[in-house]
Image (cartoon, rainbow, N blue to C red; front, side, top):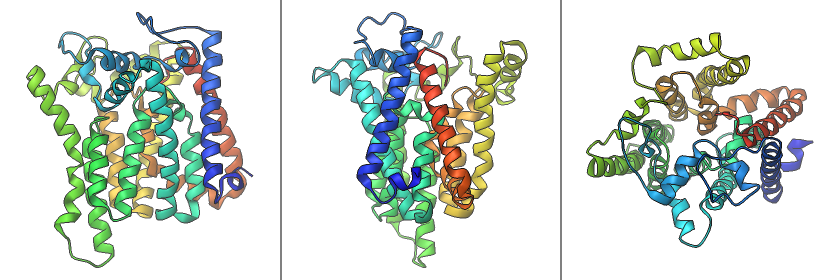
Length: 376
């Protein structure tokens, strides 16, 4: 029934995304009404539903959009957050929009575009499973961050999916351009550069054609990261400031064995309240489950998509002390939906119960987010 509702009908797919999105906004608003917590020190929140959609890291994006960047190595600083999303927010505030309204609109419209593009991408690479891929991505519980929350994940997903769609449509320059914007949005540039480049070479090889210079153009996707590093070097004298600042007190994510072996994760699971263990355990479960799907992505889609997913997951997982945030970061590894969709389509009797369960968890996560819970 769910599958038939969206099958072969772009307006219905759009309606399905908007329905899910508005449902998440409503759930977040309800959560906020039950526990009205707002960002510390923020006085320009315009009321519901935007108060419920500005949570945790949203404060950093809002501050960058209004005040720009600063760096203090001894404390948390906004240079940890990449510039594209707050720049778009700032551009909209110049048109008269409240910064939080601007952030929510950017997120929501990006999510709609990203999910519709994901269906188009899936129809090109796995047409038999395209609708299920679309539904899985749209109803993934941590996808609540795509539906209006003032975070950069939806914009990043839009640009990444768009880059792969362009590549599959023989438009490598457009793929590189969208990829460069994506690497100016979130710090996983190696994943996208490697994924796009390897996929480009794979497509030529499978067509039995010689490699051209144009096939390496997608590697230019790294220019977004390069531009941000150049800015940091010029402004603060440290091109890697976005990484170094994660070791500041409060974040405490210094590279080293303590972080790599996840000692903080095990200490918190052992000593903190059971809700902390549940939250961190969910992120660890998503991380390990997603990494376990990478070989299936390689088998079905090739090394380009497999390496992209592997790096998109491994880079934040290795640098995290406790897996916090990995549920949300996994959204970027959208090709992982393909093997899951193939399995669900094979066992069709499980498809709708699984999708309904995911939808329920999505609503729950949105509601918790609205209460100010430290979800991801």
